Image (cartoon, rainbow, N blue to C red; front, side, top):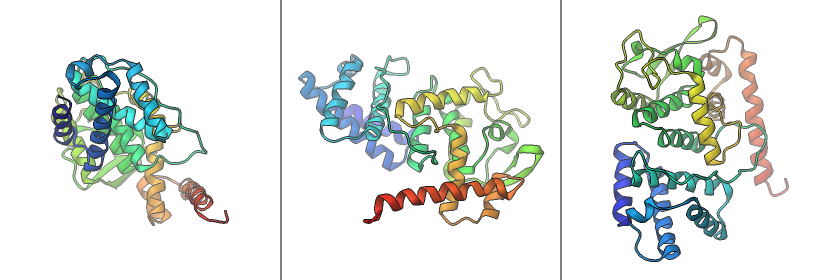
Length: 296
């Protein structure tokens, strides 16, 4: 029955996907609401057979009902992403999951990707991968861009010599300039999970991130996966792999990092290149002020 499937999916999210407790709670709550809706919408108990036979119209009906409860576009897009993940789990890796574009989210001025959006993007890219190890690879790569501020070219130029990841990583950037960046435990764990799942051997002198046939992973493949995920989630077009690096910088600056330290972490040759983030952060603070101050 539905509750048993939801419990199995929750265990899958925890043990296989390594999702956070917060994400799992949100996903499970969405699945429970959806199954309760289906029970009313179609009549009778919800089981695997019913879930595997759903159509895009069923998803639209659910979202329409949630809109009637006051759900906004961004939240509706997140719920749709969770439901696709749930239905893919129920149907198996070869299941045809009902497809529909997520609600359009109003575009604003260029801003860094919010932390929850960065994680949601990485999770959606993984969930929509054709193979489990490919999803683990893309999740690890995107976490590396957001968690360490790497350019996509820098991440793809890493080799097996970087393994196992420690607390820091030596990165070669533009003009062959090297720098040391810290590695968060969550990022290291994601890379370890990808390496364990990868069907191809990763030698010391071979690329760390491999393509589907065992060759070097091409950046266009990553960009296409992110493009598909951001459309499904209703995220703005500014949500690109490179935007994750910008978000890394902006969030550090907002947290109190000084420009010189940020310059070193990003590998900028000139401090002027780093100073652009002060303008971005100031614009973000101004938005908060306008929305929060009673006289704004």
